Image 1 (cartoon, rainbow, N blue to C red):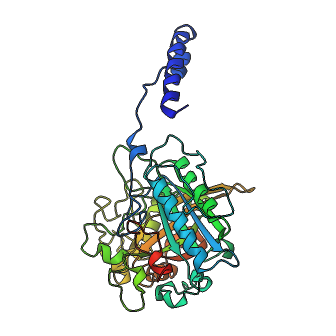
Image 2 (image 1 turned 60 degrees about the vertical axis):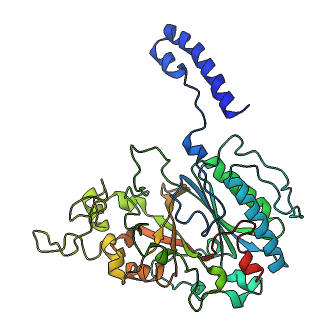
Length: 419
């Protein structure tokens, strides 16, 4: 039965319940009242194209549900097998993003039955689905393409707040999935996992979420699990250097191979939030740690969320209104020689421990034209004295080269794998 027919049946059942409610009282009416049958909403119909200058899922508005997954190529799999895998993945991603059933990408043997759609997202529309692919440093060793490895994929430096789990870090291949419907997102995850077949196996996988579209009266910057508005300082499309900060130029500079033209670099960090410690603070103290008001994200120096911070403003006691170690002050591009990145995270919650401590926090994903000019200088500055560091722990990390978008008739990474 389709979703629309199911809603119609539910409406008919609700009409019967209305009569019972007249006898049984207001409770019966509230539980059984008929709901109008509605067409597929805009949440379901929103569509983003797979092909383009850049891959989707980078500047795309963040979605309500997401998955991050890394794969390692299996022993014996090299450049040929990687190319066939990226061809399958690209074919599946194009179909899924268009709201079409997933089928085997190239008709070849993958070690799994990928010739039919699982039906997980049956009846759903595209729901703003995006699928984004990247390559880790080790991918170039496995495929004997070390001469094509960008200098920007050099390992990230160690930071004092790192407690990294190697089993949940890095990987040969990385995929970011986002959608405004959780079933659509899982459908894509399951399809791409099956497509990997005998070429690659899952190294790690993480699930995330954000606020659902329509949950607020008007579009707003999302909040994280600390209750803070998160993403105010992101580069804005209206800024003249927006593309330059996020994407590799169409004609890459020395040290960056041509296949990375119009691509970007993703830094991925699993950041555990020590929520019990954070929630013991008063709201006033939380605001001092961040440097912004919790209610609306405005800087403590006044205005609205988008008002520039007045870093020179002093309080009645002569000390800066926004403390020297406030997170917003330290992470501000002007405090880091102009270093900037596009933060596009998901929240996560992976259960509650026996001691009642939630395993929850942020799946931090940031995009930049070069990590040494984006993530690294900002993180080094935060590492030296960010007040927020006492309430977070970095538990996993990865750095991935994300090539430009696939042209019509291409698969992602074709310009690398067939160079």
